[in-house]
Length: 428
Image (cartoon, rainbow, N blue to C red; front, side, top):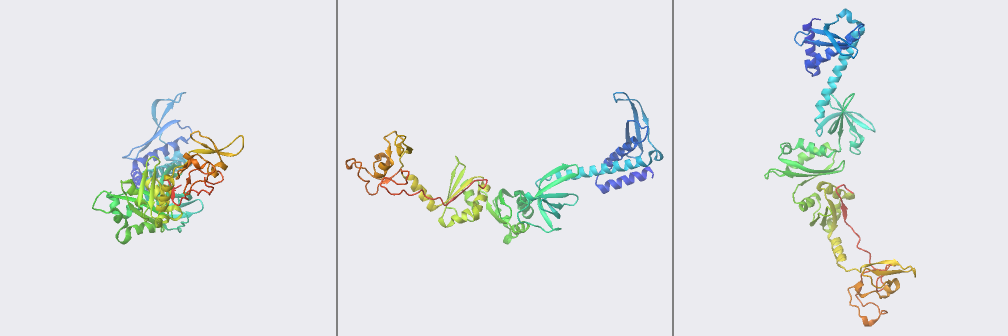
């Protein structure tokens, strides 16, 4: 084969592999150098060069001293075809193929290394209990079990969209890890279906997802003439329906984003109707008041709606009904005796010790109404009636004895039972 024929073959191979002719000639030079060093009496310090115009290949060598430093004139030691022999030719072929594989792997890695956070479409090749393999064309993607939607079992050879979460560089080539549960998949799918999102007119400000069940997204419009929710829903729900179909029926709630935090929290709890939202910045809690008939809808099935709202807003959401709020406010408005019940070391009985350091009162005397006057509320005690007199009608005692009785001997009512739900941003 002449040099012109060889250069034409190199250009055709470079075009087929999608690499530059310079890269291919560098691989060819490395292969020629390795083949030369397999020859007997070959110089230890030698290198190969290829003329990019004529295709002339040369091997140059130099002598080395005891410290492995080259010295002396450069010698032309280019072997001919008869000198190379079968073993050297086989080495030339192996090195050449290995370099081509390395270049191909490097190109595949560079192609996908910058696509983290992008969406790809693949064909399911293999599925087992640990992972699923997706054929992306030139490479394969790995879909681990942890990144799969529960109970989602796509059929083999079917097309599936996935979100690239990581691209690893391994000895066998790039390993692409994709996900079907990442919230970024929702944003990418809406970006494909909604032109306003692709153009930057509508933005997805926040996304909270429970894969396979429900998703909430908050959208914002940079153009006051464009309705962000309507743009995502589409005509008769056509756009959001395409996303739901790709997610195998996962429900999607689209709510408008608001910079006013109470308004945003109220909208995040849709479809429930919220009466009032109180923000407690010291605790990072949003206290939500809803009508009694909306309490179960605001909490959602197994607390799902409240969890998604907390993740969407980033605040702990405490949901209460109007009845529960009234009971708590009534409970907190009462005055309570300050002190504690302790065990008397001498008698072994429980006694009430006021916080102001007054005289201790036994549980029996407390139940009989002999407690200090400043430790009861709701009644005016008459000092002339004596310690044995019972408390007047309507007297509410603020402290209870260990046996659950108050000053008039009746069982004290337990605190109001909470019927709301408190969910933080982690969904606890």
